[in-house]
View 1 (cartoon, rainbow, N blue to C red):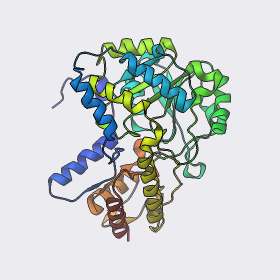
View 2 (cartoon, one colour):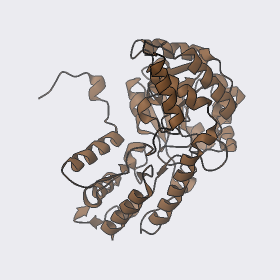
View 3 (cartoon, rainbow, N blue to C red):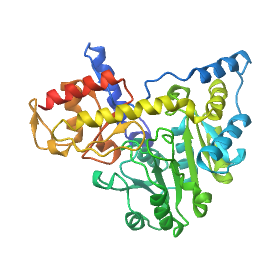
View 4 (cartoon, rainbow, N blue to C red):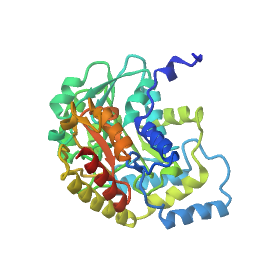
Length: 395
């Protein structure tokens, strides 16, 4: 039956990461032992000091509607965090707190994009960037990269992609899905191109900044000429194991922050009061308090890379952050495995799910059709078992 749904929703793709997770849950409900390596969700518990702050907020009767852009105390904590960790100076009026970094990004896209605008997506990119661009009635253009370039674009590629219609570009470092990270020198070289194109705004998604294995994370807003055109996006989901608490935030030019507050005021209003109070404790804590999680992720990364390198046909880079590996598996295209013809990465991911009972995500969802994403935000035992299953099926 054809239901009278809007063109907007009919034209919106389903999130492949969520679709894969749903398929994995369906198989689990049938009694099949599925190892889920599809979602980007830390398997750690939220640290106790954050939970204690939430309990205190409940006992202090924080239960009323919150300001649309977030408690002033939290926006002040965000400013302190930006100064301490990113060497960025923002005022509370430049900060908007939202129900997760995804809403933060959507707010920015909705207040900046018009029909006919172009959005540049250095690929691979997080799946929701393209969908959010579509909702903003813009068209998106992928700038491809390869495993040989460590999944990073060059200034020449960026310059060739920009047109008079370009309004927005997304950067995400450390990157989901590749784990690659732009250095300060690489960002400054890209920044030279953007300085020559003052009509282009920049969303810098830094949600994985603390899950970082080599050196500091450089924020592109530190480039003085780009500060007034950059929206820095972050949140507490990944680094603090607070995915379900749903708190994200931006630091932006004040006129953009005001517009995002206006937009959010008509969609969800202010974010959860208890989660906001807990986030103050999270952001004010020294980063060393979550180092144990980062150390564990690095150990898992090294283990997963070692095991993948034992399987024929997996070509990997060395991710510098986040908790994903993004191997090129095009070696298997055209081959028949377990009676299945593998034509593309989607076929390959489906093979792993239905034959090895391991959930991954096709790289096609991220603009990289030769790859699959494997999350190592799971226990070492589960990772070893998952890779043993994959190796057995492919053998």
